[in-house]
Length: 89
Image (cartoon, one colour):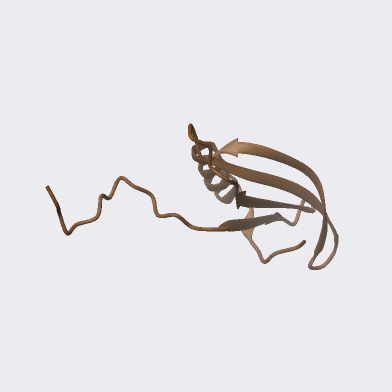
């Protein structure tokens, strides 16, 4: 049966979505970027880099993480003092 209300369980598709976090004390920057979903799961690229100058960082590590785990990691990092920031690379 047709309904005019969208299914709230379905997540909206956001193309190229990304989020940046920075830890000034450790001099680290982390980028969370949406990856291509597979037929089995949704993935996020998590890239970590070091700050080399104000507003500049070099990427050092890249790993793929399930979307649900990336959301938990992002939220946990925010609670432990990481700050949202602008793009660094």
